Image 1 (tube, rainbow, N blue to C red):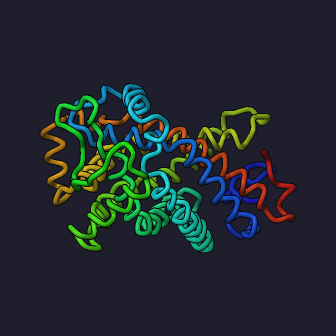
Image 2: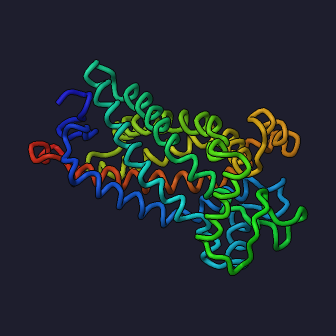
Image 3: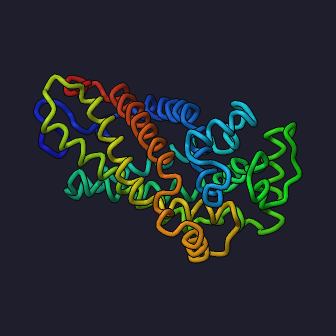
Length: 321
């Protein structure tokens, strides 16, 4: 086949119209949930590092993980997990939008990188519109009480929620949602929405574009016997590293807006600059790089494996594992 979808005798990219959607969607949701279960503690650690004042509570990623585990055990590393897991539903809309836009652009002759860039941005726009309310609640749950065991500025509790160590996760989640609704109305659930779009739409667009760029470049230099799936996983990790470094400050501003209830992105940026100066560009970066690399590798491993399993029979002879 032509270079738009293949390299040599195998498919480089399995396109939307090549798959059996009855297999693809349920397997995709199962894969997304599994990856989220495995890597969610890194999200909690990253968020707490981003929200803390300088190094008030944690000195770094490992220190944060140890302190959270000592204070609360494994449940502390899964704060807000169940409300955040709604992202699995948004993930279905995300990947449907991504593949759908790629398919439409392909009909107009767009190349792989342009298709990936535009489709990745559109997919993130749809996904963030669905998930931001749940993200706001889960981030409050992640940081609630943070600093109670050694923070110089006291425990983090911007909503004034009454809770203790024995409070159930369901009750805490319900109280957070109720307090947000009482204080800000429905709009409170979209606090930081613009910042989320500014952080995640470019991130998603660049990630998919870099993923295909790195895949193409790696295929030029690796021996023919190297697994194509492995090359794709490495390309995903490289794409995650690149986009994380570029978008890290925007992600911190988004987290601050959603959790600390600041008025605008400019206020959040000014406060962050006042606290950190140039360190703001690296705040929580290690945790985010580890999270991004692990997440990217795992997502591509699941995503590309599921595409291979779901591919229609007439294309199976062109699949390389």
